[in-house]
Length: 264
Image (cartoon, rainbow, N blue to C red; front, side):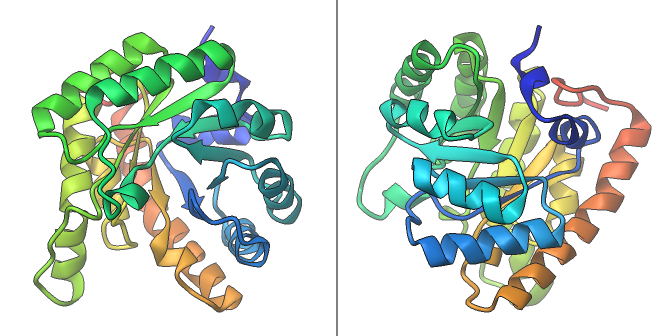
């Protein structure tokens, strides 16, 4: 039986209907006041999942103020068990954007090793694994295949830090999202796992992520960079509204949980 069936029923439904909206508070955001604002806004705005730093206190805070399932992100597998015990519904390796500026690069070998160790520690917990966008696209595809064999349940894409948008307005937003959209398209056709498209997305490009083959999206800076909680709620609601029509259109074409959508 798929580990995905252990997720809360509404979260399973969001994946099944390809409309999952994950709000990312930040892998390195341990500031309680900031996390609380983001989590309240995510809950009020209609998100399906919260992605927070891998810390038991952060997990308990996020769950209490949002009412949403919690995903914990880290690049150290040893941190996951306590956060899961504190109530997190799933674990995620990555994403890696926060480390690139420091010169820390994650190879395919590194990500596979992290995945295998996490699966040893948490054999029954749902595990999402990010594929580093610094890898060439064909290597991203192969890594996704290897991750599926190593026990990953979901694959997440990234690419926001690699994008070099040079246009203003809508065109610039599309340029910003291009790397993660390309990865979602390629990986969703290489593996039979749900793909979450994240990094560099906006309300403009969320429908493109679903059309590219993603079962859901992760959005961070569009929400967590804001200081005003009401503004955060408005952004999350806008993301929710942008995602719904795309999910409906793809669902009509017919997909099922755990499949990337093929080449239809």
